[in-house]
Image (tube, rainbow, N blue to C red; front, side):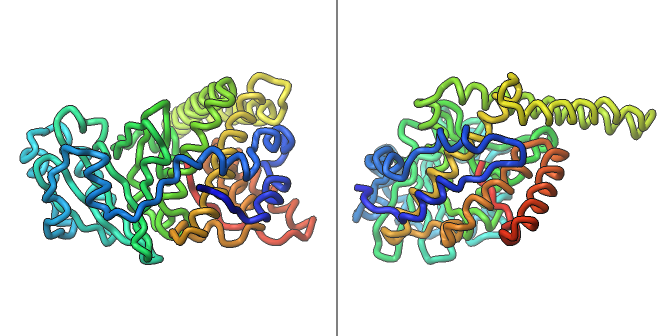
Length: 377
């Protein structure tokens, strides 16, 4: 049971920062208290003394019992076409290729047997991660590779079942086509996302060091559950958050079209994009406008998820699990969040303006330098 937390987390909540011009009070009213986070996660943080093989079989009784007894090899030696063919599921070749490519720079070891694939890797602290993918037809498809288990083992041989932090979820590794990165650049560094009962893990989860050293898998699972929890409490706010994302995608589309027309025809084609951004940026800071309401909903949603992840990370660290470096200095948490939000969750032009204003404000107030951003989507 979750019982303790660092008292500094209460001060973090009181001091939560937002981009220039946005309402901090609106966001703080939505942030849960540490005790509320603890109560929400009491039944979701499941730590066991059982071995990973036993837990994986409990998660998916149809898993091949020999999977955890097999010798593992470097995932870079895996052939996505052969594995897809061997498991009678040709449609998963593309997402498998994407998964293996995302792991090319790490210490990932794997084994495949009768429709299931185990992948194991180590975190910088020495904690180990075991994942079991269900490759069978009907479980995995071109949209993604289904995860039946996601387990973290610490130095005391205790096992944290990460998937239980997102109960009743369909968790998949998802391949994202290139054009989505143009429309939504945040996907290039996004580790996970959640939509209803569907949870997506992206290639950055495995190819970016930030998801092993700075954030860790456990922290990202807590972050996504933070989004889900807020939807249960404030469904209207999450709807506004979704609307804001869609509008941000539209801005990206306008930007791309304007640049192409400016390069190919006339530089004046950049003007509509500039006017749109100036108008939208101004509206986003005004809570009395419809667009300002949606922009603040996005900020509140990401703030809620980030704050939840810090409280859960604090607890897991007390229990001896690696949670990354993001929780080490509580006084830098809100700095990291706000810079991350400005650069990753707004149109790029807004981020550049906001970070400049934020740094000037910090310098004028003698509050130190801005922290390097970290990414949790």
